[in-house]
Image 1 (tube, one colour):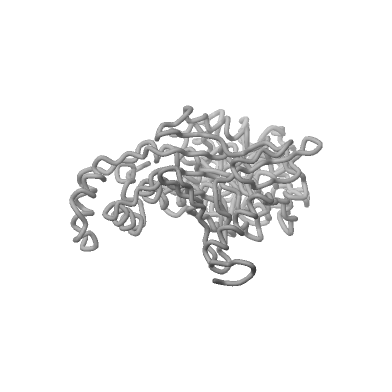
Image 2 (tube, one colour):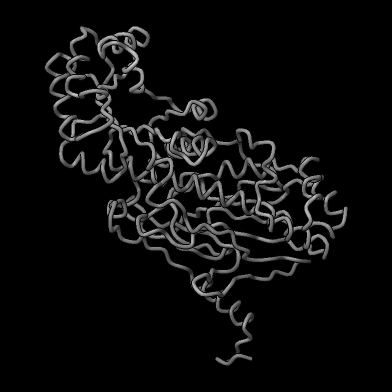
Length: 455
């Protein structure tokens, strides 16, 4: 993607490649299954919107080590004792594994696998960093967007965050994830080009400042964009700006207020526009908004039709990272399966391949069950589906617009208490008895515990 597209093979932590080299040198050739999941939800989130799945699959399908990548790695001192055969392996490398995943836009909760990768251990290890990075970030932003959109109560939310994102590539990914999460448009033109996201924008204060008068700046913009211009009215004084815009003798699409008391100013601007026969002109509000401010404004009766949300959305400022992990859950060699877990404090996870089942009641989500992949509990809908076999995608990349519709439908199925912006209850997620027994068995094997005693 962007300028990094041709070098994605090197978007790894070094230890992925040193482990791969050591696996290769010691002929460790087992087939491994890793699962990517969020250990626990942040206190500010009652649910997450799974995102980045499609970008992860594109990465796996296209992953290549080019000659310049291999030559660079060979030059590193850490690889000094590694055989030339390993670097030849990298030259020929293609991801040929299997992937199961939740559908992008699925609501997920703590410990539920979003992605399940089964491949030769070298391949499964090499891809860890990229998968974690893309899914962590896009899930963060899509989840934030879903909260802002819900708080907006049907008013449109515009994503304006590229200039405050953590780099240009993050801006494009944030625009995609925000649209997936329910935003109606983005200001990022490259995101519009790549993903077909509707574009939206107004003008900066500098546009108004360049002209001798505010009225002249408004007239010039309307002459250039007679159907679409949204006039930024608070460069000097928002109420005076609204009067100027309303008395130009022209129909205007809308006005934007970017500062000050948005509650008071929006209602007074609405009165000005209506008084001058412009009831269809929209009022757009922006300026360090987030879901909490949007909720407060609307609960107090703000006259706002659209919200432009930037920094808080593109960076998920209140929750800037998730505890996303990629953990080995089982290995298979010559038909023999070994189940894997770890038991360090606060980092225990369930071994073995899993399936997540979602149960509904009265047409709404009721609870989830994390089970072993071989289980088929009655009444539950499985959430993980085959999406890649032998390194090939099983279906074309879905339209982002269709995935966005899926998100909005999923959110409507989540009971209202879990949408609360503060102090939302925890959605019930249980583990099957079979899965819990497997964890106990792996623990006993790891510690040699028999009859309650350590051997």
